[in-house]
Image (cartoon, rainbow, N blue to C red; front, side, top):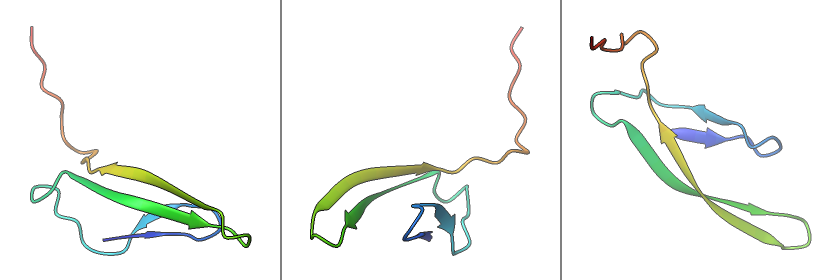
Length: 58
C-alpha cells in the first residue's frame, strides 16, 4: 500500500490502510545508481491514529 518517490525516497500511502487490520508493515527498499551500485535496507512503517487518546494511569 506504499510508494517510494524515486528521487527523494519519500514514502507515501497509495492505498487505504485500516489501522485495526494491520498496525505495521515491513518491506525491503532497493536503490541502484547509474553505476549499478546497489543498496538494500529494511523499512518498517508503523501506523498510528493521531486521534487515539493515550490511557492515563494514576
